[in-house]
Length: 427
Image (cartoon, rainbow, N blue to C red; front, side, top):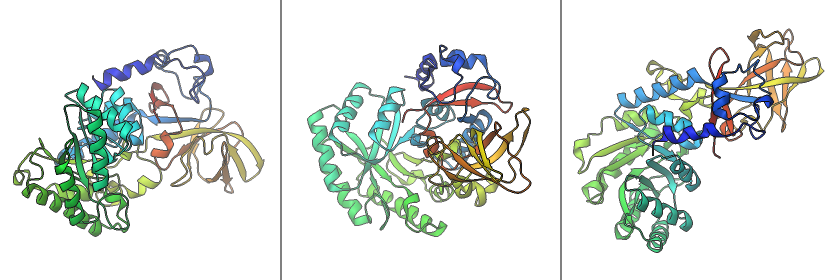
């Protein structure tokens, strides 16, 4: 299956009442029909709140990460949990992604429903029901490639037992996950990694194909500590290969990289000579938040911000439009968007632009969101700043992962306000 073609069926859904923010007068249209009308976000009947994606910023970010990965010789499997939007997966694959990363089996099932052929599950998988489903998928599609983490002998035993019960002609590919003391999942040290690798070697239904981990969960993160951990990841991969532990693999996977330290991953992985290994070496990067970037947490932590500004800059693609519905005090206003609509775990929304009732845009100078309730944003108005009931406020958000999951559908908007498409999510 081609992911771009399978996502076309999403345009056949009726607008109805299920999707927040869409025009009520378009309820009987399909999403494809509504997109073809190219309505204006501001004058086309959309209701607030409505979370939008910038068409131009999405394309910019996709192109930037493609060129960055190519420059440093990295394959790229962006983390799909960020958006859970198959239409965006299709764009990521079109921009050169090797595959898509997942975190849990439910996400893998969504990916497969839309034809993703290469999936890296950056987590342990010991659920027997999920493993039975996976075995059936691997048996039914010889071209489907899958790999996941292992970090314990017990986990290997549980996987092997479930797969033995499921049957199937293909083993499940696994990589040993390297963690760090005080961090999240992953083995603590080379000795534990070797013990897990030995268990995989003794299993009947698993195949060891690499070593991986996530540097973002190192308890103390500096360039030095991240670089040290990555060097140990590379060394462990070399040691396993020298010991013949990848004898059954078609290629060796060496993988790391979230959205905060991919520059250090590139620094450490690029000089690793692929000819030093017994099999082809896949250096796999897995950043996810880049596709929309943000106006908060990731704006500050992305390497493009301060460590590698010469490589380019990501652009925030989110904008949440909300309307001023109450102004009970001169210096306090309320917008009709709250925790049900906006991410708030890594920072409150940031007012950026105001659209007056006359349609004119002005900077949101002097406006600050101070709190969110379920359906309201508290906005403090500084002396000299103006804000009136009925005006729209465009908000920047922090943390894409917890913004996407609040919306089943997001309008894709061009710079002039024209809505050209609708992005469906599956959380």
